[in-house]
Amino acid sequence: MAGAFAFKGCQKIRGQQIRNLLEAKDFFLFDCDGVLWHGEKEITGAAKVVNSLIRNGKNVVFVTNNCTRPRENYMHKFTRLGFHEVMLEQIFSSSYCSALYLRDVVKVPGQVFVMGCEALRRELQEAGIACVEETDEPDATIYNCALAPDVKAVLVGHDDQLTFLKLAKASCYLKDPECLFLATDNDPWHPLSGGRVLPGSGALAAALEVASGRKATVIGKPSRFMFECISSQFSALDPAQCLMVGDRLEVDMLFGSNCGLDTMLTLTGVSQIEEAHKYRNSDLSTNHSLVPNYVVDTIADFLPAFEDEEERRKRRRRRRTRRRRRTTEVLF
Ligand SMILES: [Mg+2]
Image (cartoon, rainbow, N blue to C red):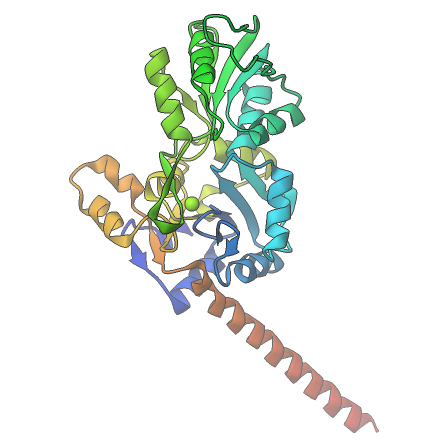
């Protein structure tokens, strides 16, 4: 079905075009921040759209590079914001996928040093992966601190408690070429209200890349590994039946392209349509992978399609009731 719709042209769609796309696709992958919510505030209509897709029998999963909360906490957030149909199995965060990578793909044979937040450590520990305990005295330095002997991987994620000592320790562990170097994601920054920015995992990974002279393997979007995690848990997943919906060209749209999915940009988050046009018009062919197939102002643009369907269902119900009444009148 992809062929009927797929051309990379930032096509702004609405009404019947959205209806056709929703009918054509069976599997919807949603980024969260900037698509479904901003912080603790739902993007108006997002919960209704997601709940309606699930009720209409579509497969829906959430793919987020945000590694600052375990999946359980995500579940609470979905429920709190009105996404009542969402189940734990539908949530694929970069911390959860990092745990799967360490446990199932590389089968890490020792401890993992986490340069990230507590939530990331918890996700790894839940998967049965041993993490190095931070037990340094407050006055410890890289000259006198203890280093664990069996560290087989360093994992970098968002870390708002980052210290110079942590960075120095991670650099020491990476001197061993057998020690893996992973990053939950490569997001450079995240927008905050009032025009402020929060440095992302990519900023921390870059610091460690420079210090270690090595390159991190990225687990989250735009790497294909997250899609492989989803494929391993949803049998017969056909990329041609999928739509990736996100707000960041360099992360979400590139992820979709890397995995062979049709992509949709929502304009409620980081990227603007002018940037997408720039990539589309670029002479550099690699930039074309960042161009979405479709663009909507907001995910709420899906709503009329469901409302029409609801209206059709109500009309069918009314017709059936009228027919039943007529039959009853004839019988008596
Ligand atoms: Mg986002």
